Structure formats: structure tokens, C-alpha cells
Amino acid sequence: MTDLLLHHYDNSPFSEKVRVCLGIKGLIWGAVEQPLIMPKPDLLPLTGGYRRIPVMQIGADIYCDSVLICRELERRFPTPTLFPDGNRGLAQALALWTDRSMFQAAVAVIFGNRGEAIAESFIKDREALSGAPFDLAKMKMAIPHMSAQLRAHGALIDEQLADGRAFLTGDKPGLADANVWYNLWFIENAYAPAAHLLTDYARIAAWSDRVRAIGHGTRSAVSPAEALEQAKAALTAPGSVAADDADLAGKPVTVFADDYGRDPISGTLWSSSPFHFGVARTDPALGDVVVHVPRIGFGLQAESIPSAN
Image (cartoon, rainbow, N blue to C red):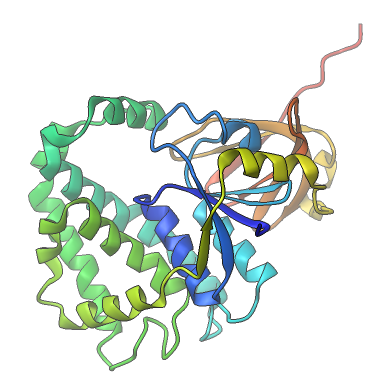
């Protein structure tokens, strides 16, 4: 059984981003199927409450959010690189475009068009996740605007490919391709008619074929029970805390996303860097695990220690 596990579901767009990165690197990995909506009884013991997908697990180290997962894949498996042109910072910062502005346009077009076909259970789950109404009527009204936004995003992609390059940053695929691709994949898979918005961009169609051909590496099925057993049997990797966070090292903290899915993860600060936080926690059934989240997009809050008096 592989040590590299991805907790996902097949039609998860952010998981597709990670799966393409696994394909670029040609990695062997275990696919742990998780539910589309809550409850997620085999995921939350690992994450301490974080419920978003995907989650990567390597032993008792748990990595949340596709941005950090892709960064950790590069750290652990540097060849082939996700940054073939060397622009590491720019390629990672690109996620602030693709995961927010571009993704939200895709969401509005997909769900605004699908309307009554969306299950009530899904709507309620996404309202709980976001803390806001999942307003299909509002999305439907936004279709003209968001369709135009998608075409504008498409124009940027097409312009980047205008010099005949095979991939967005050159002759080899990288994280930039995975960041952009998953949005187009999401549209094709969730509401195929919306793909017509980009059909007059021939360069995007050819690029999409090349990205699709990368594949997802070598995948095998791993059950949630097996994943939990791996965490229980493993030791966490050593961690160090950045100088800026030294006063919180080993102290109780909570981390949480600052956009949506703000379920708090509580424990002690195990590690940090300019790019991440690692929170050590003990699960009654699994023992010690460390949950890692990206610094950008997540908050860190010190927890007060109750007085002994």
C-alpha cells in the first residue's frame, strides 16, 4: 500500500488540480473516497474538524487545501518539478486568481444553469460550509455577467498560449497548468453546455488535450478505514517553528480558513514557515497527528490556557 493518500471524490474540482500534479510527477498514490457532503466520519478524525476536499495524508501528517498539498508534493518529490520555468512564487500565487475569481465565475455559470437539478441536501451542505445562502436564483441572474467573465478569463489563457508554447509556462507542464485546467475540467464535467463559452479559443482546446493526456499518475483504491489505520500506526514528521511564531511554539492555537469552511482546527503549534502552519493534536482513536494548512488564506489564533486557581 502506498504512503501517499489523497482524500477526495472524483468530481471534486480542487482534487482535479492535485491529481494533475500527481500525473506531472508520475507518482503512485492511494485514492481515499470521501463523501461529497457531510457527514464525513472518516475524514474529521484526521483533520480535527476541517471538512473541505481534498486532503492529503502521508502517515500521521495531514495536509489541507490544494495550495499547500501541491507545495508539499513539490517538497517531497522535486522531480519532475511543478515549476519547469523556475517561477515558483508566480505559479503558486496564480491560485489566488484561479481558486477565487475564475472558480467563482465557473460556479455561478454551472449552478445557475443547473437550477432545480441540484439536490436540496447539496444546497444545505454548501450553505453550512460557506455560512451564506446558496442562492440559485441569484446565480441564474448572474449567468450573463459570469459567462462574460469566463470568456475574459479564457482570453487571458489564450493570449498566454499565443506564441505556440505547449503549456502555460513553456514546453513542459507545471502547477500553472493544473491551476487553470481544473476550472475548465469542472465546467466540462458539471455542465458541459457551458464549455461553448470557450470554443472559439482554439489554442485552449489544444492545450486542454495536452493537459488531459498527462493523466493522474498511478492510482489505487484505499479504504477510509485503511487510511485511518495508517495514521494510527505512523509517527508525525519533525517540525520547527518560524522565528516570527516562536512565542507560540508548543502552545494551544486554533487555525481556520478565512474565506469559507471555517471549521476551526485546535491543537498546539508544531511547525510554521512563511507558507504554512502545522498544528499537533491528539485524536482519541488515532493518537498523535499533525494537521498542516497554508498560511495564505488561514488565520492563526492563540488560545488562552485556563488558570489553575
